[in-house]
Length: 234
Image (cartoon, rainbow, N blue to C red; front, top):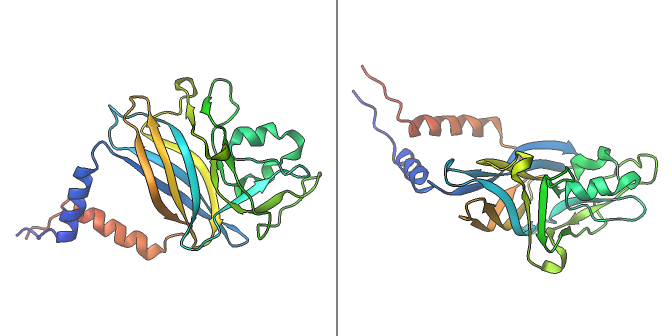
């Protein structure tokens, strides 16, 4: 006889159908990097592989949520220059060391030839300068560490995107490396842009810097099995 599919499975299937053509944003590859900090990759996924090619981020504001302190930031040694993007890290020359990179929250838009297009206000960030990780000097002084937000200069409208030549636009695009205190959260606010213009606004979506327990993965597997409607016959 057929095993009945649970109401939870039916609800999940309904959600999958309603999400057709949507853009889903998540914090993936959560990793304990020490000193009470967790890092993760901010990924945007399009459920429409034909009509929705993700290519950029517009008007970002990633801020603390739930009473947390926000994103962990690393600024250059001596000058405390802002490093909101990979391009800004690369431009910091000898005052920046990639040994600090895993501890910094930054967008992956880089200085690669023809890879990135920036329109409007540059991407920026804040840094409290206190309470952050202790990082080695790398030969020219320790960097400034603390917590803050990722935004744009003076809050003005700004857009950064990966060009077609970069090979990065697609249905799954990793946009940023984010770092926060373990079990704290941040709220995501930005527009995910597409080559077709069917952009999607992410408003106040909360993500947590917490590594799922093994039991959670087991429950997820059972839920997926229910979604695909596995049956038992006797």
